[in-house]
Image (cartoon, rainbow, N blue to C red; front, top):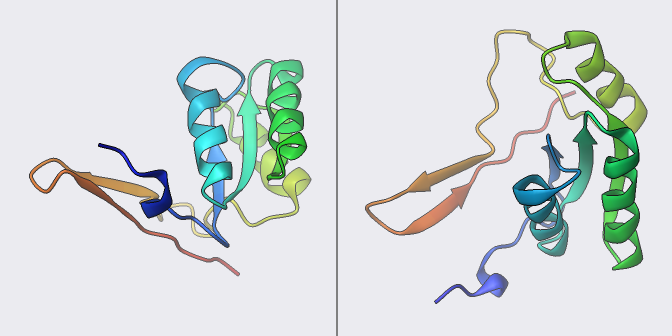
Length: 115
């Protein structure tokens, strides 16, 4: 059985794409409930704002912006507008945010900070 108290992201920043509805919204809300500050992004800026407002109303920390992840300039706008370092500074660096291990049936959270 899933125990939400075991999944904590206090002090983390999560960039969630496609968070205006469906699975993306559920991920954004779950990460916020676990203590992360969430950058809610979606191609539909109004939907992203609605989700960020709902997270904030529930006591979480969220920002929103319209974003098409296929456009690098949109990702840079997300980084600037959020006020948080949500993107790696080195273009070639990858950020493993959540690594699921099927054999052990649990998830390890890996957080990195960039300056």
